Amino acid sequence: MALHDRWVQERKHEHYYKLAKKLDYRSRAAFKLMQIDDRFKIFREGDSVVDLGASPGGWLQVAKERVGDRGKVVGVDLRHIRPLEGVTTIIGDITEDRTMRELLDVFGGKADVVLSDMAPNIGGSYSTDHARSVDLCMYAVDVCDRILKKGGKMVVKVFMGDMMDSLVKELESRFKTVKIHSPAASRETSSEMYIVSKGFLTSKKVELKDITEEEKRPELTSKGGNI
Ligand SMILES: C[S@@+](CC[C@H](N)C(=O)[O-])C[C@H]1O[C@@H](n2cnc3c(N)ncnc32)[C@H](O)[C@@H]1O
Picture 1 (tube, rainbow, N blue to C red):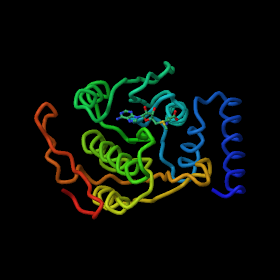
Picture 2 (picture 1 turned 135 degrees about the vertical axis):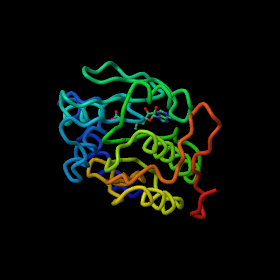
Picture 3 (picture 1 turned 120 degrees about the vertical axis):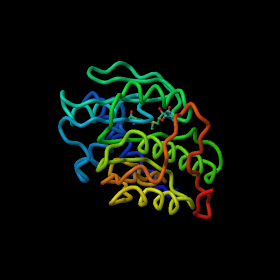
Picture 4 (picture 1 turned 180 degrees about the vertical axis):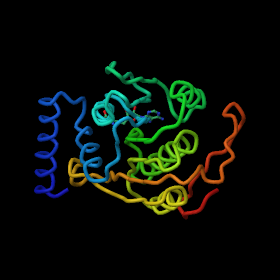
């Protein structure tokens, strides 16, 4: 990375870090969701929201503020989430059926919005990190198929790479509009992008089985097709 890019990145990092501290948000990521909502109008008062990969809780704070007291917000993460007033949290791995089942039980209805800021543990090669990130996105899609209302919205984070096109195609088959966006609060040089999808059509030809049964989630290949 060029010296100038690094300098810009560090200043930006520091700016949002200080702002989060000052305004009492649990993460810098909170500003990304605010910027996404300001631009794409994700939340309405009274909405029901599922937030995947929610710890430490910055997105939960923003979602709760924007849907208000009549809204419902449920967060899921592998890690502990410090209690937050008016928000329900589930500790578990969304790739495991028991977490999905708990989410469906706790949520007890349909959601207006599904959010996912889930990120894999970084450290593999760039393409491995990308593939893991896309895999997590497909679990978020699976949550949409089970829980999202017709007309609902989804915001999902992905690390860019060669499976991006097939992920976008998968989303386009389910939503009226799909846009790729990088909010200003994302680091300048970061490979992360957010996919904002609106107008959920239906759970794409998926006969949703009872999750106690063995099932097959759609998987993506780097060649762009389903396997
Ligand atoms: C970038 S952080 C999310 C930050 C959060 N949006 C905020 O504003 O505080 C990504 C989170 O995804 C979670 N995560 C990764 N894989 C997951 C999985 N399979 N199930 C649930 N959470 C997962 C990680 O534990 C991590 O806390």
